[in-house]
Image (cartoon, rainbow, N blue to C red; front, side, top):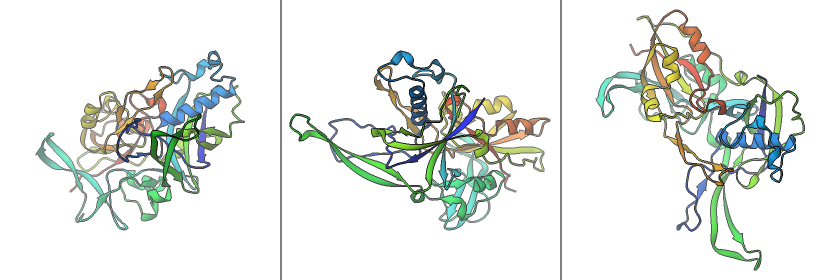
Length: 370
């Protein structure tokens, strides 16, 4: 399959709505915060819209929609990977939730001893090593590809590997109102308050698009409307495989007891049909492929994906997903071929929405506390 990288750079601000309700007539001075980066559901819609326009489709000519682009419920022949945050054209990923930070110092979480809690008798994550006072989980920050390589290899990043949120974007509050065309005055009760994001200089988004027919000309796509209010984004398209953006598969060796210990880290939101089961037991594709068991996990707060159904002209139901940075710790017997199977899983998308790029994982290693 042919792949291309689509890079999006804001020309002004962006507004990507999340799952928070935003209804007319609500009281109070509430605001709706923009997401950044947005979910792939927003970006794939912009890409397919642009491709359809290039093929001669328009809202006034619905019959000209290319069958290769699918419909409102499927992608047709197209596949996606990402989105990935780019800073100075280098990829950054949500920081793994096994990392703790205090100032310039870092620690890791690993499965601890068995304890009894509301989940039964389980192994909860504990700090590997001594200390840990005033260390906090890194949330809302990003880690460079080089820093992530160190983490999946069993090490720790440097301070320079972490990109704080304020270097990526700034929030920008906007107050808007609806104006009457007849009176040219504001309509009563139609005031709204939203918070846009203004990406910092040298910040962009990248997704990978696969399956575009070879005879389609996409060279003229330079700018497209993206997100709420149709804000324009500059687009750059280059041929590139999605594997290029990822850290390399780490060296995984059996411990002294002969077991392989690895973790599966989400780098895009995890969309799974049986989410409660996946949280406790991990993605079924992993245990189906590799004889292993989940020992523990670091799972972030659930996110919700909504959207607008153009076909039905109504909001889509909210779907809970796991945040990127979440991970599961595994143990497996060191059997023949298991390392190659792990290598094949590295960078794969799992779950029901894999063609959208959801639930993409990379493999890392961890060591038992001695």
